[in-house]
Image (cartoon, rainbow, N blue to C red; front, side, top):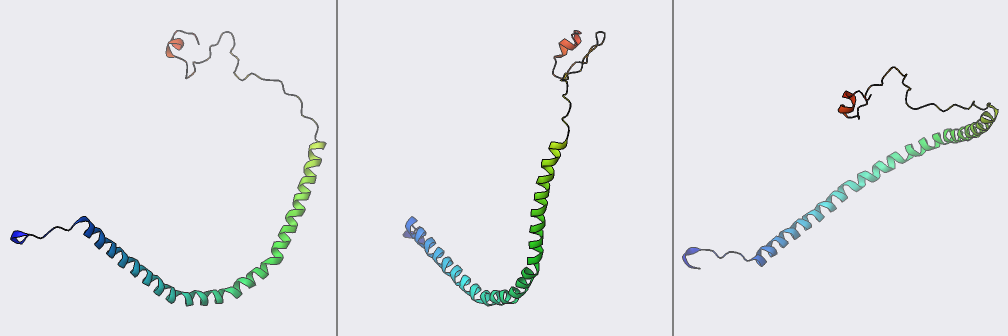
Length: 128
């Protein structure tokens, strides 16, 4: 080009450069993963070996407690079912209730206050 102007990069060149940059980033991420795995794996194995006997001892100590709790819960469940069957049979029948009105009754000389949903005109007119 004349007068020192640089040619602009085409779209294909930009996409190719971007792809190369992403490939470099992928390679760097893979290398970092390998280095971290090699550095951390032995420490994880050591921690696992150190903790395993303690966990096994704790589980062995808890086994009798868990068995006793399971036995007690089974006994309690059976006793509860048995007591429930007896209790409803032994109670006398409740007396029949008379149906009551949901709304309060107003005496002949008293008016009930207007409800919130009643139009103001009806309340003002004395319909309540």
